[in-house]
Length: 198
Image (cartoon, rainbow, N blue to C red; front, side, top):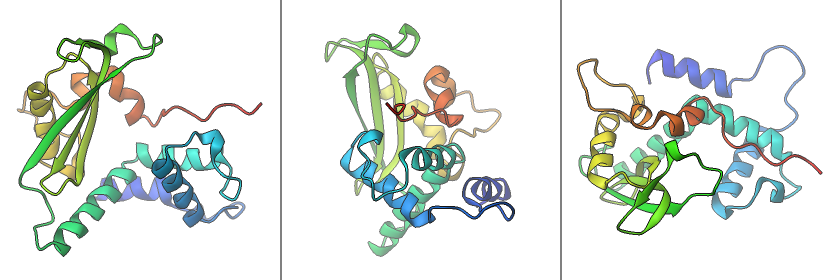
């Protein structure tokens, strides 16, 4: 892990040395995030025995913006591959996609028409290794073909520790260059917040 990634990890996960101590242990925060991911529940439906949903979401948003979530994914995938007797980094990948109908509030600049599936909306692309371990996920307008998505994902897959960083002479667009409107909020950590309290 490079020094700039280490600094990002410290910024996202580090505990401040001054001020009041944290009210909720980090393990409980992680358990709450895993619960939402595993069950697919709404933030409002987070059980009361977890920390408050706004607290959990705040940690998740900061960690995602700093790349911590991706680092955890890559470390776990590398460990599984080593246990299977393979090299930590995948040398062969598979890409697949699914078109999803977009809500009326989704702007035209981030949606498209998939003629094959007859769906007007967005398409989610998932890149996995030969064991099915996820390597990269992208969301694009539905009219983007898988071949074009693969060319877009290729530079990022060359170095999973630096997703989105490209060689200055590489003219292949990266995920954030291909559809900046979709990726801008994710890179800034502006994920959809939990609904307001009623």
